[in-house]
Image 1 (cartoon, one colour):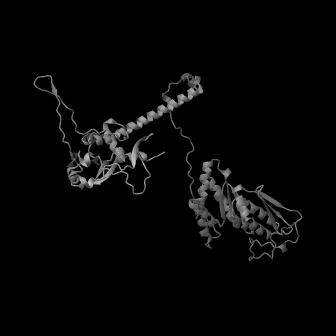
Image 2: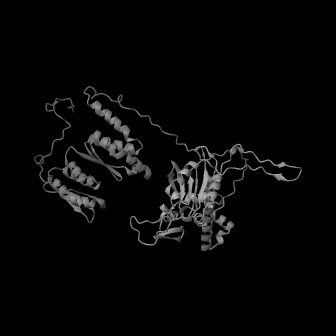
Image 3: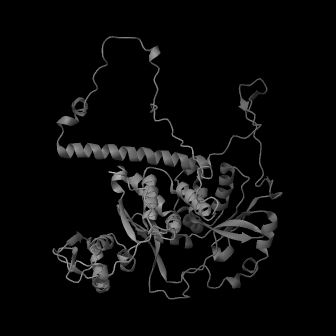
Length: 505
């Protein structure tokens, strides 16, 4: 039979668009109604029930235009579409099938209805089975979305498709060419190829398509070529042991003892359930105590004075032929020159201040003069109603918190609770060593009246080290005051009881 493919076709002209899809009208269906009823059904998740119930009238109205009937079964959780006697387009039932499939994948109804148009297709890409590890799957799925959905928006603009990432699937709607691109990008992303490479390639292709001279040419020379960087998959052992130093022996190593063998050796295997639990608890408590002791030693290290440079060992001298030895003692003044302040630090105590309450100040002479010029030191009458109990509070031993301050009555705004002067004021310097500072603090506290001194020494501590007891009390109960342009630490014995109410039960 002679070939006919080269024969002239007068109806085939250049002005015909061979890719154009003509709309199917009822006049095109010359066969009449269908002989058999076609139907499709799909299940939907529970969380889509409320949305579908509200959007179902809109879906029913859209399907009636093409002669398709639809049913929403809330008991079974399914959607069904089927042909009727008014259906004229054979492909309408396939579009309706895609519609309910998109609705089940959380596509909004106004967007899903566009699938009924002839030039719109859909593709539901299953991505969960492409990656085995769950954490890795979540990270790669997030790459499709990008930061604040920027990557997904870029893909939608370049492919002219609607894309929705939901659960284990990616639903896309658009032209066939765009859907093919979307599937390739999504599968590459799940194969650990970042979508930014595909976006760059699509942007270049979109610009090249605008140039009429390059439309029909090969674009490979314009597209970027990314090198695949794959690391070596050889596993490196965590510990590499040098076997050359070991003496060869034909005997295998001894078998490791099992957990039961170890329990038999220690005697734990023969203990009862309660005894075994008690032993485990005692071991855990012993570890806790050891850790607490280590932490306590670490805290005490902050108060250990550093070794002074240039310190020479003391030498003993014999005098007058007698066997007596006398030590040379270097007397230190009550205060020493402070490098940063360029002044001495001295202890000043007024035992009669505040009607016998007393006050000790460890500061420079200049600041001490400013203190002495204040009205409370010049006129005792200015201290009226100060250092007296307001009657609004009392102290009591609280379980696990020490001595705390409790209210005697219902307190209101602006009620006075305490009005006391500090018992100890100390300059907040950093020059003295810990033990030197402790010496001056002890002198300041020892010169206070007995009652005030006892109140100070009864305050709570943090570390419990007797070598630095006064500094420990100051650290736990101090208030900072700015006096004479310098920071000072103030200890108020009565007000310090408020510290123990910071975490009431």
